[in-house]
Image (cartoon, rainbow, N blue to C red; front, side, top):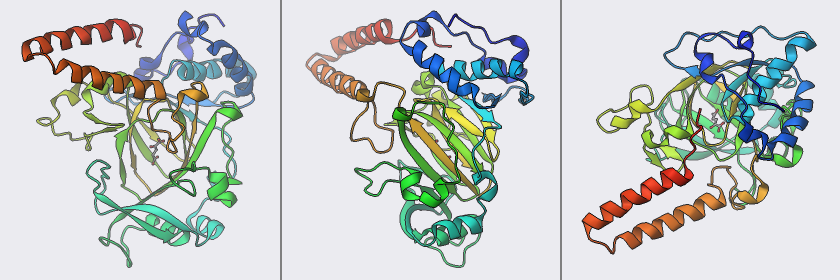
Length: 375
Ligand SMILES: O=C(O)CCC(=O)C(=O)O
């Protein structure tokens, strides 16, 4: 495929221009081409519209008119492919997701999967913090959990009468098994049609998520591509590019900055430099979150979501012990270990020399490993 510029008239005005991009020659020659063509064919079977996560201080986004004719369809598919290949988040609306979007009421969910036990997060505060672990894990029958997550004040509770609940489904054995809604929630799985925008062999996990209104999930990245399918309830997602990692005060895959709306600027002065992208997912919307993009999620309403991770790197790149899709690829972990050894070696030098050679090493890393085409 030749380098293709998205036609200007197809792109929403305002913030969306931020994502306007060109498929470069680099993607043409790196082995994505074949996949892209195959993907293009399977995409054409589906009708999608696109909205683009926009920079927070830009104009309100515009929703594109749903394409109804074949001739208006191709640019939308191309636009999605651009986001996929250029590793940019995008909101897809109007996808065929199955009967879940109409069926999944609180009563239906409770009846469908009954009283099987689920391990959940329970938090006395709306902002859950994985690093300080300000929440507890508890087990409840699924139907009881759903009722509790849907209510604001509880008669029965673990911590406080207005505690919040969150389910992130896991495999049978958390250390070995991967979350797959077809295995853990087989009845509900029947109601979902997962968008077929990747090859079957690339599938990694389908994670069922149910959240109380108001609950906020810490900012983190995952190492695989991901569709966040918002089945019911409204959810706000704030995203940051992997390039802004230096401003996010990372601890592993998570950011220390919990309150992205009112950050402590004394503690996190560089956070202001991170460019914030934001979208609000309505029921039936699907957000494509590319691997390594940081995301912070707040459920504005009680909501049910499914997120589907797939491997876009060769399968051997991933850590085989990773059941969550958030362990760094093998080569990245090895490189970080080597860096740690190099830093240990620098300690053999007096401070003046250590500082000088550390700076030279940074320059070398920048020169050899940084992209210069980051859009
Ligand atoms: O929607 C949520 O509750 C969290 C989503 C998330 O973290 C993800 O899609 O990786």
